[in-house]
Image (tube, rainbow, N blue to C red; front, side, top):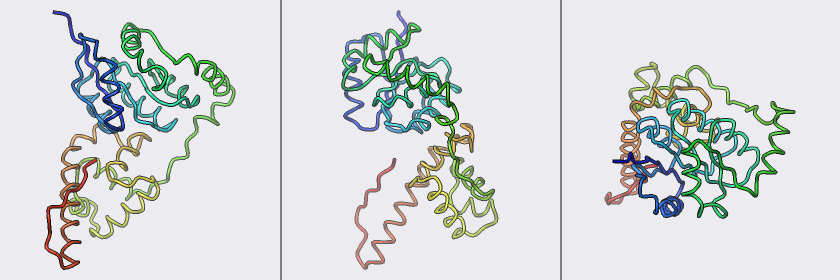
Length: 259
């Protein structure tokens, strides 16, 4: 029996995921074990499942997206990566240097996805024809002035902030972090607020992903990722119920989104 091709589809919204899946509908020799919606799952599940191919449509920024690709390729070097996105030439160059095998424009090339997948899995590369000139131009600029395009200003974290981020990645609650660092729970929450401001990330999961991308923590720190998501959900549910009780109303069934 012919071995099936394993493909993970990562897209920010359901419509985009469905469009990619529909474009692969005629590939009878492929299986899609996961469809995911964010960078963290792309990193974690590619590392765990080592698919033949990862298709990314996550609308990532230039250097951030390139670092996501580097992390994935480091942990799963045999996985080919195709990015579906806009035509930002610097992003495309950064992603190509990071190790992607294909970059296609959704509006122009998605109907050719089956052909592109076969080309990439046979060792080829694909770049949308309409952006090839821009890519060559950007490569020329990057080679002349590499620092101007690849230098990233990293936020400066204190030792306490680094310790808290590492504990968040391990799935620890505020109480556990406070006990670990010998600080009050209020101090922990204040420091997390400062970290949010520095990283411009609203969620704790976002803080961890940001820190992973920029080398603050390692992928090994994600072992308790699912546990952390459960903790965050439970905290949100508890806080929401408390707010309702403060207003003098009886708590109702309240739903809290889990990212």
